[in-house]
Length: 108
Image (cartoon, rainbow, N blue to C red):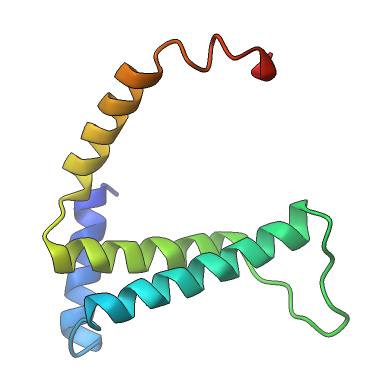
């Protein structure tokens, strides 16, 4: 599935089941909430924190998908073509960081 196809799937789902998109500010808040849930799973799985005794373990992949879902919603609402934006972003990073990480002694 491409990013463009994912954006279309989300748009079709919203129009079929979601009635309408939440407002952009609401979706930004939801995105922040979803990133927090993803952070909780990563901290408890890979970091020093442990799950609380009765806390249900979350699915890392599902939490990542929740973040992606809301990001796709925001892209649709604001007219961002994520395929184009991601391509431009990779090009920017490649030009800017072509030698930066290779020369970083901390990474070797």
